[in-house]
Amino acid sequence: MTTKQTLDVFQVIADPSRRQMLQLLSNESMTINSLADNFDMSRPAVSKHIKIMYNAGFISITDIGRERYCTLKQDGFNELQDFINYFDKFWTSKLKKLEAILNSKIKEK
Amino acid sequence: MQKEITQTWFFRQSPPEVWEYLTKPELIEQWLMKSDFKPIVGHKFRFTFTPKADSKYDGEVRCEVLEVTPYTKLSYSWNGTADKGDRTFNSTVVWTLIPKESGTELRLQHNGFAVLEDVLNHSSGWNSCVKRFEELINAITVK
Image 1 (cartoon, helix red, strand yellow):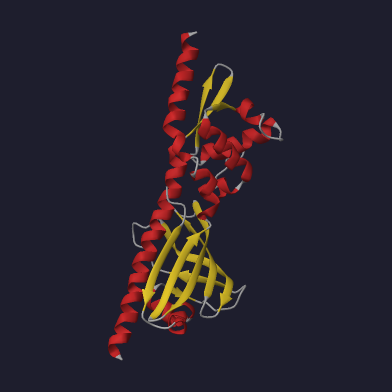
Image 2: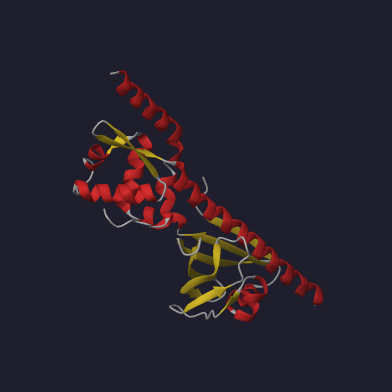
């Protein structure tokens, strides 16, 4: 985990294991160890996924004693929502323009 | 939480007339953006625009034609970057033209965003999970 993972929010959730981790965390906060119990992969591999989701703002990590607890965080999800909202507005404004062009063509006829 | 973009518009032109505005670069540019689009599956092209000063987006969308069914369906990938290359987005745009008696219904779907679905379906449980986490911390500190 020496290299900093800077995947974007879409790349983060494109991975099925990470999506499954987020789903598990949506039920409850979990330690990395207990999360790892649900997957057929090494604990370092799980940690790597956690790190990626942490960097993208999907989870927060709290150390309690010797355990690291993972909790869902809103930021990553908000960013996804921002993208969708942005493009929804984008298309509305573009298609309005198309509508205006096509309407004016009818009037010309 | 919204998972994909779907818009339905109605135009009084026939599907072939509307199709022209989706597939001819000089017509696309009138309402959407400059591009070197060609209606050929596998053709890679770009939409370019001048981003506003405060825009997060970098003025270019990279695309590849995925499906061309004349007058009926057109689809291309829609990939770009924002925040000076820090953020990328990979999505798909699908246009469907449905002939109607007095014109054409044009449907736009912008997804690929679809990959989010199973995550977003589970996103409602946050408040309760945060509460549970607080309880957990409290329980541990009490000991």
